[in-house]
Length: 311
Image (cartoon, rainbow, N blue to C red; front, side, top):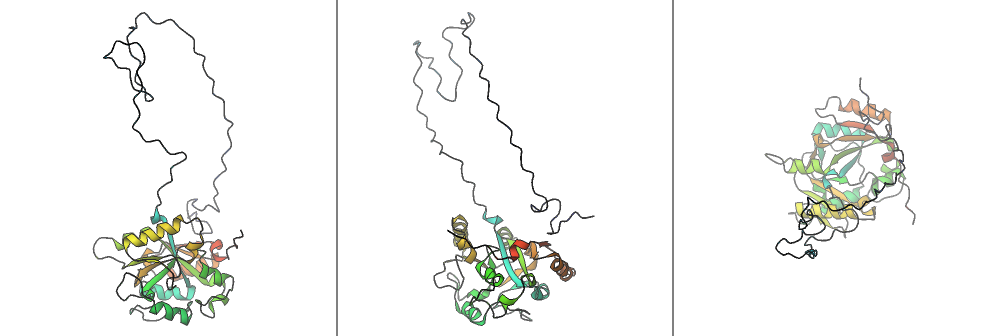
């Protein structure tokens, strides 16, 4: 029998249902310093015997009969910086999030994955369109720098945060010109969030044989924004992503996008996040006939408006 928790995770992997125990504070025991007793030099030891080598200083020279200690040679090692070294940024662990309505999920499975708006592979358009007409037209006319006549609409969009600004606008019923008229009035539990990682994207793009993915781009804001900077090569996209992750102000991540050209195979989705257990059961029913069944996890915090940040 599975020990899966209500959030869809197994084996005690959920930090909410299986919190780690708080470590007990152990009082420090002061070290006892042993007193050094003077002793007469051993007659068996030669007077000219040198001290054993030390990492702190260089050994005395044996070429001279002088009894005084030689000067330690200056160390060529660079002085270590004060404080702990910063761990390298593993961008592969960065999650990416695609928001869609639950009524669109069956169509995604039928097409084998997420399709870009401008893709010619559409058989049936999404049942629920979240994007407004003006926003869709703007993305269809905005070119991606570094590509040949490729617009934003030729890419499948992903957020870099589950609290992305446009998603928060739906949760708070806030007017946003990028959203369709009905999107802000939909219930939060009507949406699902398809989750993957940058590592999955990179592996699919650089895999053996024909790459499963096309161009990968990263933006530091709305992809159709006038002032948005875009990285559309492996080097520039990696640089933009690292800069976003290094920002002390997390607001940039709330607007940023990761774009995948043409299509994103459903097999690269690792988690389908939902608002409650009832929706989880519905989603599992939809995925029952799919060749790829990712984990369906209930994670309510992603389906509630983020708290405003005050100075």
